[in-house]
Image (cartoon, rainbow over all chains, first blue to last red):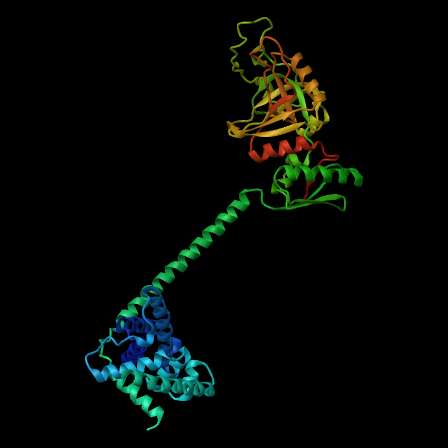
Length: 163
Length: 338
């Protein structure tokens, strides 16, 4: 069984970055990542037995972030997700990449967002994603396919907007 | 490059472009978890302790109060009892149980007995007034006696005091100086009566026309006090018009305000007028529950209008007495066995 502290040191930064890309709020990302790892620690005896604990932590963070984000959006009456700008604008290329990913993640459903992050951030295979998300492999493939189609469509739109 | 590869590349670049943050020490998470577990443990222990306290309190209150109870009551007579008598008892018992606050109590006639469920636990007591027919005998007080002590005398009970100083207090006719400012005299117990045993309720019921040496109902804090009383002057055993427990407890007990029915009200007035300025004893099933000196502050007798006050040691006893008096006598007295 892997030690929690080792797992934490390996996975923390990856989960945090995924949350930054998803919610485009470093403070919020920090908060939900901490919370997700705390929940992981609470259930570590069980979570550590999973093949991919990071997938469990990632989904926990997404769920927590979604709740917090919705609450903040309601409270602060923020602008819609897609036209928000990344907070870090120190480099144009960095901004464009983050903007693109933010656009992709912001324009898909919750399940599609989970699948995209597990696939492209956590680097899980289709069977692994299916196990983490608790669904069939076919469902994961369909979800990813729909997410990519959606992403492709949004990417073109975003490019047009940028142009 | 496929779309999947392009997306992967995009995610890699975007992810790496996110400024690196400082990874907080996991020690903070461990500390937070420890605090949470401690809180949960304390909360669980507190909840457990609270549950135990509530259960203990509920148990104590349940035991202390007249909790729901089931008891079988048999006729207190040796011969056979007609079913009609038991049915009559059932009606009286049901009325009494309603009056003492057990509206859900059920009474059934089964195999020559009454089975009471959801009734008061005091119903099983052999001295319960709910299972007996209250009989109020009005007797004249002859003299005051202390508790029985020394060798028990088998001689017949005397009918007079051994000395005038032990006689019950009276107001001399024509002594107007004492009227209006009466103070009850302190009467000493007659030492000649200390050898005589107390008349039992059974003896009292069997021989109402004989003198009796009866205990005075008190709060049970002091020694037994008794009165030598004369033969019964009148027996009041019908259903009274009303009986109410007075909320304010008398010192060491409770008062039941009784309103007699018109016929017994007349009997009470006749006896009270005859014994005006003398002391009478109200004998309830072998125990003196009141011993009033009749209207000591009045110069002439005035009707009681059927009013009478009876004493009870406990609140439940007072309510039992009131219920028994207002529901009328049982066709046959009952007793719990086993």
